Image 1 (cartoon, one colour):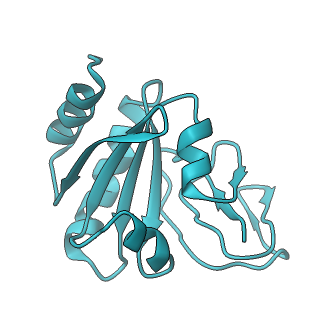
Image 2 (cartoon, helix red, strand yellow):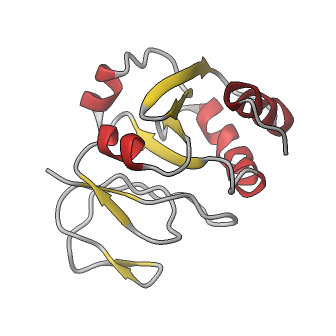
Length: 148
């Protein structure tokens, strides 16, 4: 099974769904099969989340969310803004825990939203709950020891 994991793009509403190969997203053809669909700058396909975080040139901030989760919905536009501010620092990926329960189980996601920052292929920070834009930027910068 392959997951298409697509980097975040600013000012676009998230859409996460199972799709078939007849659809296109932002001009990029989608591959058959279930896909993780955060937003697209250039489509990347990975067989696992592990492969994405290991092969990423930048640290990866993963947002584990569910569509029914109020705090997750609150975080969506904030994450969009943070992604724009930190685009040179971190790659942002969203994973719907309802569609990918095995990934949520592997990372022991018990509260939503849960954020995990991966650096050099390994988790370096984990936190739960809604944050403001400034709090999220500060948390990411502190975790990665960088300053914008």
